[in-house]
Amino acid sequence: MAHGRDQASGCTRQVGALFAAALVVFAAAGPAVADDARSLMKKTFDQARITFAGKMLLDSPGGLERHITVKHRQEGETGATYMEITAPFNLKDTRFLSFDHDGREDEHFTYVPMVKRSMRVPKWTLEQSFLGSDFYMIDIAIPEMKDFDYAFDGEADVDDAKCRKIVSTPKRASEEPYGKVVYCVDEAKLLSLHTDYFDNDGNLLKVWKPSKIEEIDGVWTPLDQTMRTVPSSTESRLRILEIRYRVEIDDDIFGKAHLDR
Image (cartoon, rainbow, N blue to C red; front, side, top):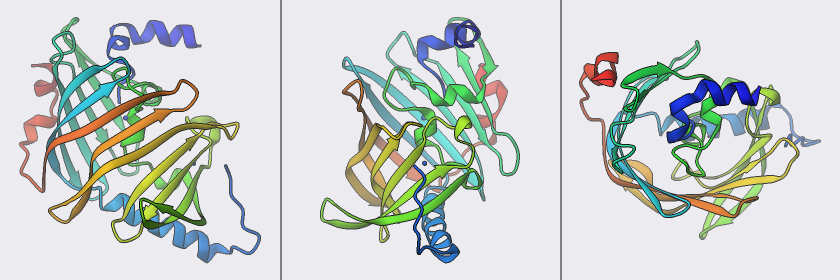
């Protein structure tokens, strides 16, 4: 199966996989506690559902830098994201277009300059290295909440902030890359200040942490963040160089003609 996937990915493997929670049971925890945990995570995810345009710099292991422009339009729980690599030269003009549909299967496309055409990519590509980094595209996307259970797991102090720990567990573990994800959520900022990703055997796989957070137009934004892969001891850094919220974005940006231009 893996060999078939390698062949199917073809040229897309040059740019990595494209488009980036252990079950906790409380003996005394009833449905109201679970509902409260789900409610807090929904508020956290919802504050990230906002139209924006920006520029990012992704530092991968080995000192490789990828410059990325991104435009995202949000309408309710339906979103569209366009990304384009502007540097280095060998990846320049690689483009990604993703549609996050509410109630039906999402769609993901990429344009590969060396073959001068775009193609639809399968969901499993979201669960591999993005542009050679420690990030998966799925790590920076908003998950489908209906596919996960959420439960509180106490509190944690993160950089002098008191956070609520929330464990996210997939309802269908075989369909997800992580066995669980543990968020440390700052209830005031509605932002996780530390996130641990575990594999299906319960081992710590990756650690995400922001090092610089600013409130921009009422949205707490992680301007500088890292993802560390524990088994390989590698780390990638993602910096937001520029971001503007609630901007007008031309409809053509999210069309196939713009992707293939």
